[in-house]
Length: 439
Image (cartoon, rainbow, N blue to C red; front, side, top):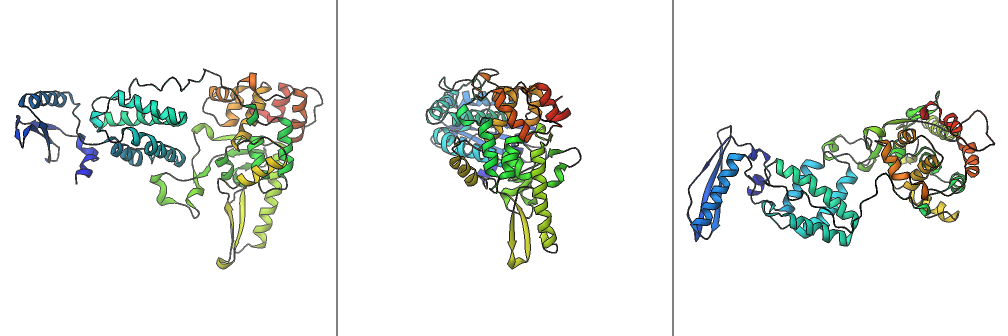
């Protein structure tokens, strides 16, 4: 019963209060506070454990001041561990993506709970939070950054809900070992980014693999992994040769779990990362023709199995013939389907052992290196702001080391244009390739 009272957020909505005089309680002194609510109900809270009457009276005066000021902490016995569990599950989980939820849960359980989880919220001090950041940074810098985000957000919420009277995370910084990133710059690790020649090699090698379309979407359109898996044939404008990115596949938030579609929980259609992620991108001829080839296979399967074909319309899909159910299901790909094929392609073709996401990075850095309009590149990438594109991919001092002449065959091969240009590649050629989108 006590556990329920701790997190019954309606407790903060008292309209009146009573505070009684100090009295002897067991072997010490204490007093009682009664909170009154609009419906006529009352909640009594006992403040005890003081060794002297003077100490109890001083605490009573402090409590009376908080009651008058509206800063009285209603939830006095909540520990950090219990509060963060409540905050993450009830407040944050319905609002954040499943991947963010998993990251927060890991950091809370492994780092925050271990360091300060036993402390009562009303006793949490800035020195405790600083120690948390220091200890976590010694183990993992990325975890320390997440811990700071969690503490800042959760403590603001706790202050608003009268679980604490002062925010202990305010003005507490990460230790100096966690370096701040320079404004408007970030170095690109060229060992983890493909140049034009390597990109062409990967694309050619992927033709005989099940992930050819996925490679094209990442390397030539800059789509995110979850966006690629969510692309449907209905997203293609076959007249204007564009692709509209309007969904991704992943796990739905807690509040949406009851509305799962007829497939695994990890392959649900969910909204994109940000509002800017909803975008329309031009399709290079090479990609457009590859999509048409995939569509032919899709339609052949549909015609042959018309009565049992389950049409989900995904371009990147796995064909599964379920004989026992007499269904031919075109299932969307799982988020890690590409991994073994991708790593095999890299190894067999003597390419750098990069991450899948580095194909998206390679796409963007190629454009920025050759003086694309950053605003246009930002739209192509689905970034919320132009500065994000510059910050993440714009350090030209260490961007992909290949000359302009090497870029021309790449553009000739994969980007649309009425005629092939043999001279040095210019901004006009980019505009021609991508049309009005880059204007």
